[in-house]
Length: 340
Image (cartoon, rainbow, N blue to C red; front, side):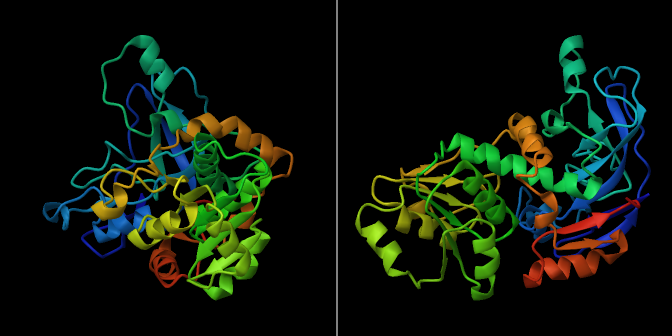
C-alpha cells in the first residue's frame, strides 16, 4: 500500500509498505483522507520533534489526522463495527524498519479497541491515540472528518482555559489551529477576540473567522493599546509553538493574566527566560472529551469543517502539498486516499 513518509531528515517521499494485519484488539481501516498537520508533520520531517540525530536517517511514517472506514475486526474487538467511519487510524506497530508512531498518511491503518482492552484487563501496549479512535457519523465525509480532530483539540483547550462569554481573548497564530480557536471562541461568545499574526493579507480571513481585531506585527491599534494599559487581555492562547509567539502572548496578556500554551507536546523547546513565566499554563487537551460537542455543532450548522480546508490533493501530490505548507500558501492540505 501507499504511505507518505519522511525517509530521512528534511525529505518527504512515497513508499510501498505492507497492509497492516490487525491484532486481536485492533480493527483494520481503509483510510479515506488524512490532513497534513502544518506544525507537527513539518517538525517530524525536519526531525525537530521527539527525535535525535541518531534518528535523522531513519524512515518515519507521517500523519495523524486521518479518517476512514473499518473493513475488518480483530477477534477481540467489541466496540466497533465494520462500516463505521473512525478517526486517527495509523500504522503504529506495523511499520517494519521505520518509525511509525504516526503513519496515518496511508491507504490502510489500524485502531485499537481501548474499552475492550480495559474490560479484558489485557496486558498490551497502548498507542497514545487509542482514546481518540472515535466514531464519526455518516453525514460527515472523510475529508471533513479530518478537520474534526483539530476542532476537538481547540474546543477542549478553550474549555480547559475556562474561556467565557463576554471575556476578552487573545490568539497568537493564523494557521488552521489559530483559525479554529477563533471560530470556536466566537461561538462561545468571547469578546473582543484579538488575533495576532505576521501576514497582512490574512486580515480578511481572520476577521471572517470571528475575530474582532487582527493585529499584524507590532502595529497595535489604539483600542488594543488602551486594553493593555488597563491590565491587558487577561487570557491569550499561543497557537504557533515558537518563542516569538509566546513572547507576544506574555506582552499583551497583562501582569495578572494567563497564557495557554497549546503546542506543548513533548520535545518542543522554548527559551527558559520566557517558558518559566508563572503566567503560562500547560494542559494538553483530551480531544476525545469534546467529540460529542463538536459533532453537535457540525450537525446544527454552527461549525462547517469545509471552511478550514484550502487544498484537497491526491497522495501522489505529496511534494506539492508540502511546498504549499512551507510557503504559507495553504491553510489546510488534505490528502484524499479514496474517492468520496
